[in-house]
Length: 323
Image 1: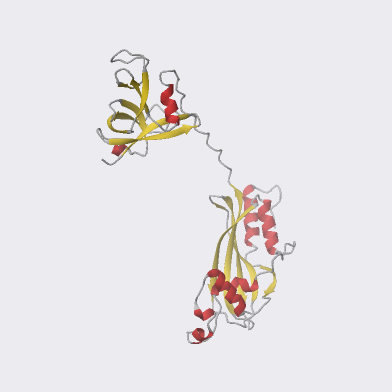
Image 2: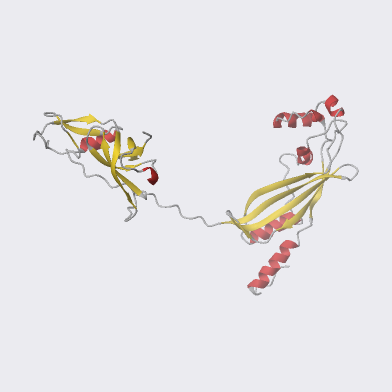
């Protein structure tokens, strides 16, 4: 019985709980009768589907010599013998206690459902010729529980299976959670893009090379001096003529710093920044990748990893490698 509409909240909750618990032990529907006896052809199909090669299920000679003294059926087929035909639904009439219980919890907003577990108990092996019947009762209804999916009630039904003489041969507990889905957390905002470089004629080649997976070093065509950062004029011979050399990507750590603060939203922290001596003789500043702070040592060998940060920007990273 439900509480009056103007009843205090605790009285309403108590009445609801009592109403839920009143369904425990109630039988659901009519006694189900297996459409067929336990039989060898169905056992064969089951064993083939499950890959079960136990000879006591299909080999009469082996079964006769076993503790069973004859063929038996796989215990896990228990439910299969009495399953409703495909397309035949559950009794959802107003007089069905399970339908009433479902309507009650759904009236409180617990409209979603998920099956949580199934437990079978076997009292004896079934043999060809056994004809089963099944009775289903509502075993229990839990108090309100909060799970990762949301808050709701666990509803457990129990199916008891009997042979023609009325002896129970097994049972199954089947548990579902009727729940109110937890509010979805808003998706985290996408990480902002890395700051865009200010491109000029003197260093455009460097970023274009990285887009192709190459680390290019500016080289004076008059005296072959390499320079980085790039610039319009050779510091050695004052020439304005230059081309590029593709770096091998190998080098060593000259120095490093691990930045914790202030944090820029587009970067990951702690932010490991390296000053790398390339084997070509110039130094490059870049972030590390796939490297722990413990691996950062002055003189540690590193190798280049060109990483595409987004569709428009690729940057050099360096990871520590075994010497």
